[in-house]
Amino acid sequence: MVFSERLSFEQRIRTAVLALLLCAQAGFGFSVGTQQESTCEANGSIYFVGEWYFLDSDHCTQCECTTEGSACSRTECTSLPAACIHVSHYPTDCCPRCEKIGCEYRGVVYELGQNFQPSECEQCTCDSDGIARCLVADCAPPPCVNPVYQPGKCCPECREGPNCYVDASRSQVIPAGEPIWVDSCTKCRCHDGQDAGYWEGNRLATCSRLKNCTPEQQSTKKN
Image (cartoon, rainbow, N blue to C red; front, side, top):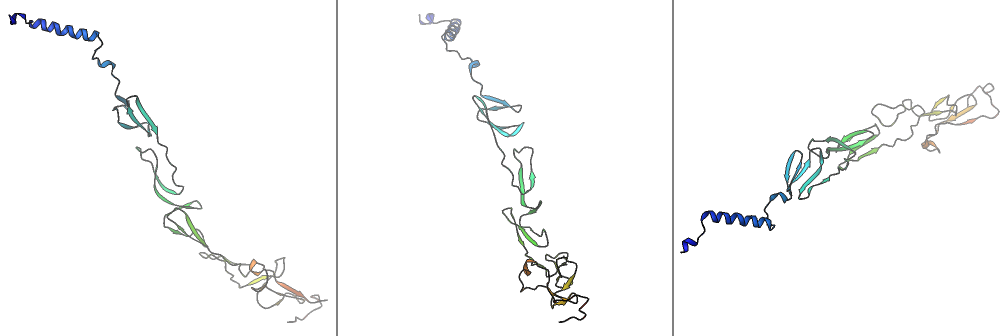
């Protein structure tokens, strides 16, 4: 009969187990122990293949978890502008940030667009490119030997009016204008704008002396 030829339930179980054993011996195993790891461990965490992360120990190093392990590269910070007047470095950032750029002029930093006067003779502006550009006043040589600098003014002033020295000893000063007798035999005149050397600052008088004259012999001045 057909029903008598069927295997009992226990026989079917034995057959299935035997088949699994035969497959294992033939090399068709299903062990997961031979599979490659698909995670990376860093920063005390587990990352899967394809995930990116920064190292906690170095925020400039970024890594990718690959099937061969972590592949990392480091970011190099660019230098900040020389006139950066406000720098921030946040704990989670790799590189410092320049929050504000200004101009540096003689060791002092100014904000963009700021007008400033570093001295009485200079008017400067901090331009948008971070460069301070200045206009400098050009003072002509003062027409006197004792100029005075007034607070807040660029060029010196002659309080006593134009004058000059009589000679190179610079011991005697005479007013400019008409010739002046500096003694009974010598007449001197200060240079003016028509004379050579005046605009170069020559402040010595031009003098003429009477011939065969000494102060003791000549008692009257001649104009």
